[in-house]
Image (cartoon, rainbow, N blue to C red; front, side):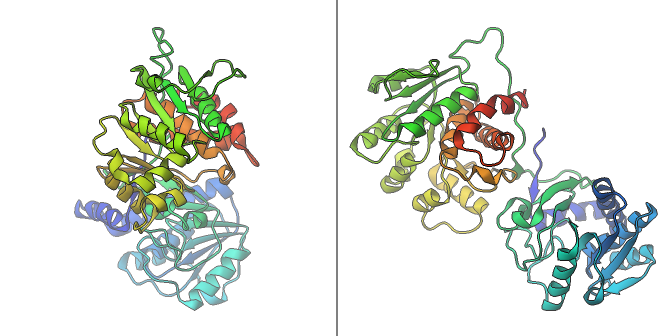
Length: 461
């Protein structure tokens, strides 16, 4: 699946302006956008009685086009507006509708409400009058659709400037916007689909994490060419075991749990007493350290050995906590790639002065550490020190459960061992982790994800 760009308001305007500069009238693009939204609404909800809420700008103009298109399809549709159109294109769209327009404040509700009040570029809260009327009409609808962005949401940072009822479906016009993949706005958007309106070539600085392409082992493969992953055990053996088992199920050919003796299923997992020399094996494709490591002297010694080595690293959990105490200077000079996987609290300890959105923080952290940074959250961000970033679609909320981060670390270990590009490896791990969570379903525990990984892998072959 091809990765899709995630744009700012300014990038969106620039793409539109490029079309206008080539001769496309603003109204023609508005018609294209409105008809696309109407067709998607028709496909999803059929001939459902509809109320379109129109604002004064071009988002409202899209709304008039939507209403006209649905009327052509035989839908009982009404329009309620917060005021008269204020742009030439929106006025032309109002004429295209050529039907009654009710005042927003006095409008009656309908089973389907389409929010075309305010879209990309909103920078201030809605007025109390508009907010009260919109909330009433949206709340009364059985189905709610937003045009480009839900009204009251800031495009670039995902701030909710005015809290209206969340919609069920948002139709992004031309491309995803930052708010579609940023908290708290993502909770307002519901399911997000992108309508292609022909914006052409778009910036690729920030992309969506797409389903990865994973190659099946060739006929000449062996356990080492499929990737050897070493997971460092420690004070909490369950966490490192979760990481080890997930590394196996993610497709690693050889997984060694170093520092955990004994025999227990699965017998394919190599359990070995801690041996410093084991870390010097040149066949190791990645070392995962942190899950269940602990904070004692031996944990510290093991982390020191791993950092001093030359193997690609996944640093998670307790390893990040110790790194926060020691300083990021410990990562300087490493030739092999490092991926840091903090959740919000761990990130705050590593980068106490960082501010901004999750994207801002991930990019700042990656630059400061000189490493790939995977910032876990509702929409996980993967950032590269060179300024590239990718954001995942909203992950299943059931992943907010103990041990799921350990599973992610193990998946990442395998991807890092198998792929030449650590940035791509981190994105692949995020996608597989989320997909395993989706397959595991409600009330999952971390152990359930491991069983779902083969299916998630199969979807990528």
